[in-house]
Image (cartoon, rainbow, N blue to C red; front, side, top):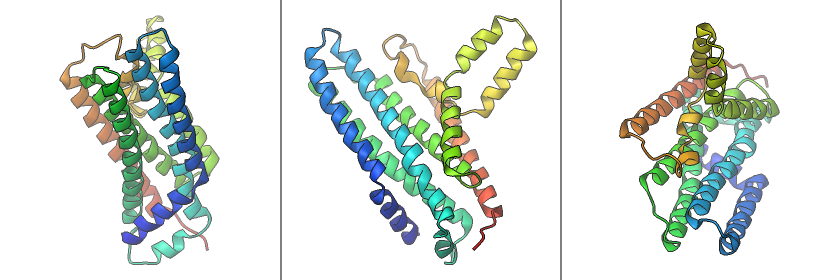
Length: 253
């Protein structure tokens, strides 16, 4: 397990694209601070919207273009043979690899979130429960996206994995619009079909509360509990499917 963790850490630290993402994230932080001094609009909304959006966008790109390459490269470059030749099961490789990637995502999201909360504190912006839930839900979205990247990386090539993951991400945010359009037709079969298809996609739209923090606050605690449970269940199912496919995969030397 230590070898998997060490190898994962080395792969991440060697990826130049990750450093580029961190650099641009820092540039945007500096830019946003300057923008707040010049803007005539409400600081509270700008700070909250900007930071929550930035955390999700930058680490969305990171998961797609950094994390997606790591498992794919192990398979493509045949380095996976060295790992699987050791006394380790395939399911252990996937689980531990995913857990270490998740830990890295957690650390960077936590660091940015703490920085965000510090900025809010010094700008006298109220840190509401919705802000904290939004940060947690953003982490869930990244974790589900990471699990999807793992899943597709086990049987399709890298660029197709990125493309499909991006499509799933955007489609999953659009079901309320699709349901609204289909509802206007008053076709029960079409409405139920869209609802069924929605169950197959990640609950990204339900987790996207950052977009309504300033327009809707009447959330029940059951909403957060239900979506947390649903996210963890969806995440677990994707990892199980990944393990099943990876166990059956044949590697050619």
